[in-house]
Image (cartoon, rainbow, N blue to C red):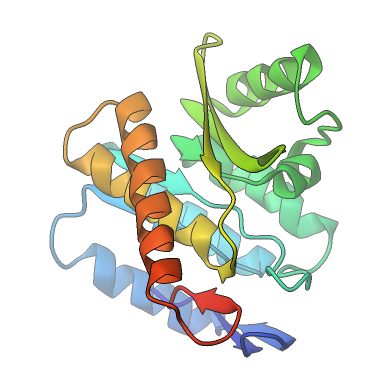
Length: 226
C-alpha cells in the first residue's frame, strides 16, 4: 500500500508528498480484506494522519496477524527528512508502536524516537529495554552501527537478550538497504524461524546480495533497491 511519493534520483532528493488520506484508507481496506495476511512490514508514512489511519485499521486485524515489523524511515539516505513535525513522532510512539512486534531503526531514527544519545554500552541497552517495555515491543534491531572497517547490527529483545553481528564495508553506496533488511527479516519470521535466527538470516542475505551487486561491476557508485 503506497503511503508516500518521493522525487529523487541516485544523487538528488528534491521532495516527497504523502498520498491522500482517502486513498490510503481505501487501499488499506481493500488489501486487508483480500487474502489472509500473516505479516505486515511498515515503512515510510510521512503524515501524522496516515499514522493514525494505519493504527486504527491495524488494531482491527492485529489478532490475526502473526508479525508486524516497523522500519521507521525518518530520513532519506541523501539526508532529507521524510516526516513533518514533532507530532508525527508522537503519533508513531503513541498510536503505532504498541501494535508492532519489532522495529528496525538506525541510530538517528532511534534517537529521534526515544532520545537515545549513546551508540553502545549500558546506557544504550537501558534505553532499548525502556522502549521495549514502555511500548510492549518484542524487540529492537538497531542497524548500521559503525565498527571500524565493518558495519554492525544489534538484535535486542525483551529481557536483555542480544546479539551483535558485523559485516565488512563494501566499496559502494547503497540506498534502500534498511527497507530490504526489514522486509527480509519479516520474510524469515513468516517461514517459521525464531526472531534471532531470522535476524541472522536477513543480515546474511542482504550482505550477500550487496556483495553480488558490487561484483557485477555496476556502472557508477550508487546501487538502488527499487
